[in-house]
Amino acid sequence: MGIAYARLRGLAGHITCPVLVIHGDRDAVVPPAWSAALAAALDTAVTPLPGAGHCPQVTRAAQVNTLIRDFATGIETEGAAA
Image 1 (cartoon, rainbow, N blue to C red):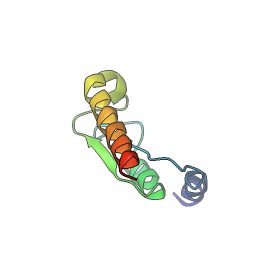
Image 2: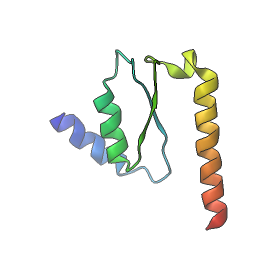
Image 3: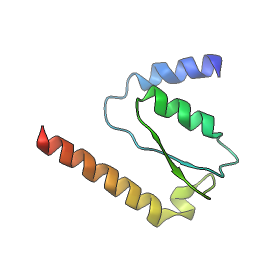
Image 4: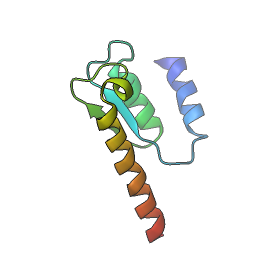
């Protein structure tokens, strides 16, 4: 990953909001290592979608929407507690 990973880390350093990284474990376009690197750079975890390919927001829209809703609800809850 070398230079690309260094650039990713640099760009990730500008993100100051919570991030949800979703990755289909059957994605033939983006290797899982890229999502793992992104998540590591953002100090978060990868949320895997077993059996999903490259565009789970299309092929598994309801599941992705639920993940996003739950993630956003968690952010709202954390913000309310602060």
